[in-house]
Image (tube, rainbow, N blue to C red; front, side, top):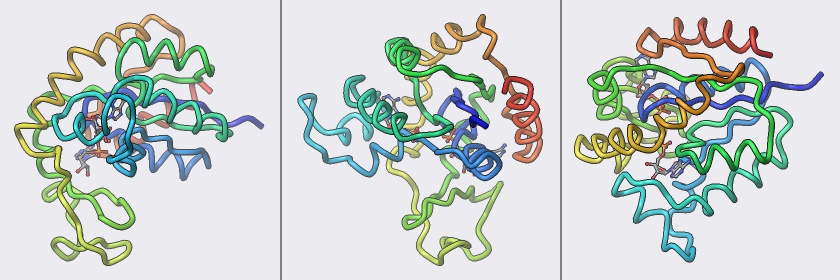
Amino acid sequence: MSKPKLTLLGAPGAGKGTQSSNLVEEYDIDHITTGDALRNNKDMETEYGTPREYMEAGELVPDPVVDEIVEAALADADGFVLDGYPRNLSQAEHLESITDLDAVVYFEVSEDELLTRLTGRRVCDNCGTNYHVEYNPPEEEGICDECGSDLIQRDDDTEETAKERLRVFEENTMPVVEYFEDTDSFVTVDGEQAPDEVWADLCDAVEAQF
Ligand code: ADP
Ligand code: AMP
């Protein structure tokens, strides 16, 4: 049986990474996250400079760099959840030219909540497990429950850069939401709810589309 092909749209901090992990476990699909792929290759030289310059400023990395990462990952995937792509209309068109999606899920979350989530996010430096200082703290402060490594705050989760990323989302990615809104594969989920409630709605949405 074929596996679901999904993309999660939502502002930075909307819960895409958190819910992607649930989807991977439930459906045994690949998690394709452009943010992680770029963070692992921050100093890669490209004709546009390095990803680092864009990421530290909260701006989008140029399309050709990101499109190539996604195209390579999709070629190897039998079912996937895309997290953080597409982020502008050109990427959306590129994606549609290389695959068919079963569902495009948009997590709707208010700006105040997004800022609280981003500035409180902590990530394991070793295994990438995601925490929040208030909403989802580790058992021991600053230490990953899963592997015992240190938790870090991402460079771009400071208030100033987070605000810029939210602006970039409104300008570039909201048009993508509007682009998919009228298609049969589009579903909105209330991402402001508690994680297990978001997960329940997401499951229903995927089951209905797939
Ligand atoms: P994204 O991948 O969309 O940027 P994350 O999944 O990394 O977002 O979530 C951002 C932060 O908010 C993390 O610290 C995470 O633990 C927390 N978080 C995720 N979903 C929820 C939720 N439904 N309610 C409260 N906090 C959440
Ligand atoms: P994320 O981990 O999804 O919050 O992404 C972190 C940063 O990586 C973003 O602020 C961008 O600089 C870059 N990035 C991630 N995905 C994309 C994308 N699809 N297009 C361009 N830049 C991206």
